[in-house]
Amino acid sequence: MDRAAAGWINGFIGVVIFSGSLPATRVAVMQFDPVFLTVARAAIAGLLALALVLIFREKRPAPRDIASLVVVALGVVVGFPLLTALALQHVTTAHSIVFVGLLPLATAIFGVIRGGERPKPAFWLFSILGSTLVVGFALAQGVTAAPLGDALMLAAIIVCGLGYAEGAKLSRTLGGWQVISWALVLSLPLMVLITIFTMPATFAGIQAPALLGLAYVSLFSMLIGFVFWYRGLAQGGIATVGQLQLLQPFFGLALAATLLNETVTPLMFAVTVAVILCVAGARKYGR
Image (tube, rainbow, N blue to C red; front, top):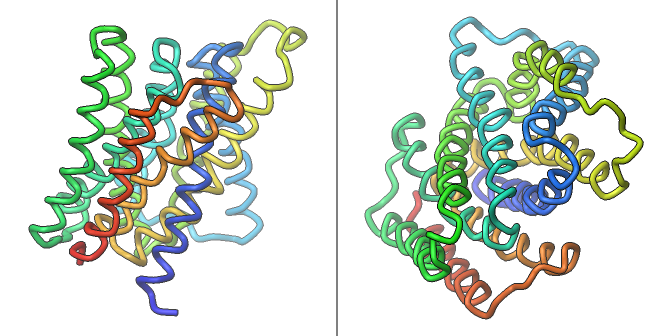
């Protein structure tokens, strides 16, 4: 199997795992404070990451890598989880998931800026087309209905795209699972401290779905998914493999409808299908 194909396979596995993030966050934020949920998931994943680097005796990152790890931590360990958790207090999972369709464009832009990639002009056509469909959907729903929620989701997409591109660039030399592990370890002291101060007085009233949501975003969304995702981006190209994120709304909407009984309108489904069709074109002209 060539490197590009391996990148698409690893990227696809990462996208499937990430697809459960927003539904799980939606369930968890119903009973957990968004700030606690953000720092708790990072603290739990950070402890697991620390165990991994100790067990495998990984070398510490070089001083030149620290700045990039800080960007990864701010983007995907803190920024995206916190902003989406706050957004989900104002919008439904189904509505927020479609915004994920903007991630490929954000990731591609930062891939050019930070990763030095140069996709063909036709690539940008397909990427912008997919993102335009997503923005059009949001406007059709009436952004004025939840302007704060939509603004938070857009901010989440921007910081996440930066974190993805920066992590993928660093994965070329440091390794996929090592990047997210060291970013989590770097964040761990502060995350544990804030977790202690924001922890609920008692967990007696917390129901199983919220606890399962916390477990999912801590283990899968915060750690395991990134092992595959960063490896895929490094192998197949940040901009190109990043277009797989256009598939994430499809999986996420299915989960929202199945697990949360949220309404998936024909328009949501149509936009998702149209966005998926952009993946083939973007893949063809991405490198």
